[in-house]
Image (cartoon, rainbow, N blue to C red):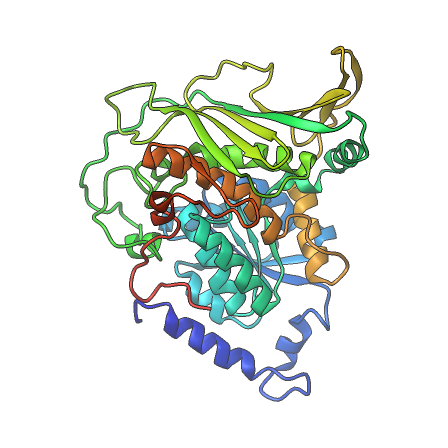
Length: 435
């Protein structure tokens, strides 16, 4: 098999061209599986690590009418573990696959659920829609600003459904309070504080090591430039080992809080990004190579601001909760958690709250399925999700170049020449995003 993903896309496109409703080149079995003939949606899950648990129920409950055709991961033991997990629930056996490109070739697959590392999110979604698939892609939806722009372009060109995993967008409770904020329940919004706290511990110092048994290191890297395997990289610590695969805690978790704040305040692109403090504050001799503490401020037109207080390795709950967004208005404030809220008046009196526990992942997934079936549109489309993701990239870029900078509030582009050098990334030859 060629290393390049181009040959896979070419084959997929030729195969898709052979499908006709009249039945030419299509078996009755294939026809019975297409959405026009059957409401069932055939899906593949790509990436079987920590996020898989959130999707076990959504893809197996009868009401969603989904058939799990593939379980795909570049690590053999992840595939086996996932297969064993689903064998206890399903009365059929999903196929196990190492290479997502083979799934792109399968004309019976309607949708992919991408739970992969960050550097695969946008490329994986773009390759999939190019192959005729709908995509649920986890956050952040891009590894860098240019990928976000390309993701939007690919979605528009190939007209497939892409849902980004900002699950709060499908929370009925959150939708309700956001609507009330837009209708003026706390007056005019002017500021939001977004925050996240965790107690992540030490990580090993990365050093050259043999590729772990069962890991396809070539495919793990995928679109990223090739490099030597470093100890303990593949299993989550890619988040903290440089910028090749991850987007730091900003893209890992702050993205949800940025999205809540921006949604509530009806903001698009900032005009200034200021990183007040971004440093590695804990375990100075461990393998973590980027900030673990981030304080940043984004200024938007109309002198509206979103502040970021991110603590990866200090779990003190500064605001009474581990994560959330507090939105301030001229008549009051709202504490948003993503699945609930607390509404306060200007004097700080609690007026109303709702902290009902709902499965926002399932609601978000149902919205994705209903969008594929033509019943609705996705609650977190790429052109909206990328605006929130861009805030992650802007603070990361500011940290990396060591200064604050202005932003074009019409399109989100940085005015700083050094910031623009980090707007895109280099790709492994043959894996470039070409629309």
